Amino acid sequence: MYMFIAASSVFLLSLGFLWHGWRYRSKQRAILTEVADEAQALLRKLKSSAEKVPLPAGEQDSMATMMEAPEYLSTLVTVLISKAGGSVRLTEKDFLGIGHDEYVSVFVDTSDASLLLCLNSISAFYADADEEEPTYN
Image (cartoon, rainbow, N blue to C red; front, side, top):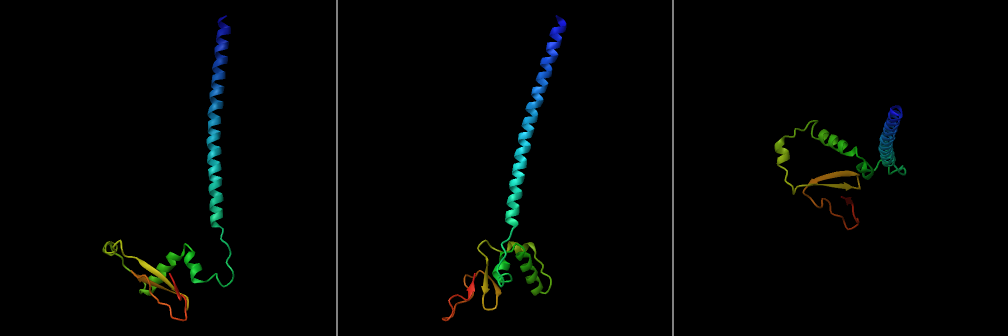
């Protein structure tokens, strides 16, 4: 009789451990599946955002196309430093001296594809009577 009770106890204890292990693995599998689905969705999103639509010939080197590229800001800073003689020293006073109401306007002159950067300016060029809009900002 004691042998039967001991065997039953071991059997029930084993079933409890098996059930607990199964439940633990099911939760782990659900978490890993969710993480895998999120990783795949993120990968698809990154791939779709990385795909660029090829531009027609002639538009690939235009100023407007260049300004849309994320690398353009570093290229713009490089050109500005080059025009300033090769080095620019910016101190904390320079940053603190700029007010919240100051801004830089970017104008593109379509006649020679040049940029004009103006501080606190709404309009840098005015259209002639013959031209509708020579400058875009």
